[in-house]
Image 1: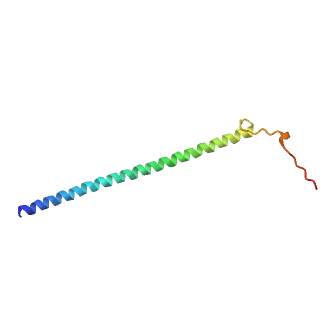
Image 2: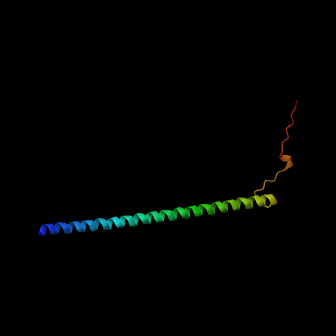
Image 3: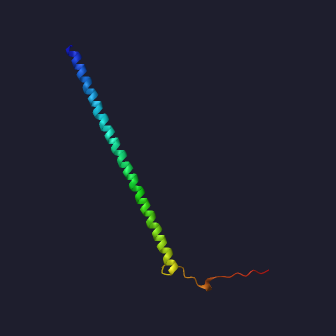
Length: 89
């Protein structure tokens, strides 16, 4: 084995390890990004569900207050406010 052949082999081994290292690092970063993205999506769905539950509960409470007459938004209808149209034949 000559000295030049040994040097080329050694450089190729370094090159193989270099690409193996950076390939593993790339895979680790991509796996982390996928993990974080999946967690964010799960959290987003949970917050969305919670928001919908709160909204439904608020609407239910408002309907209950209107039914019992305790709502400040209840429309007080005065019978004198109605305009009754009579049809003339």
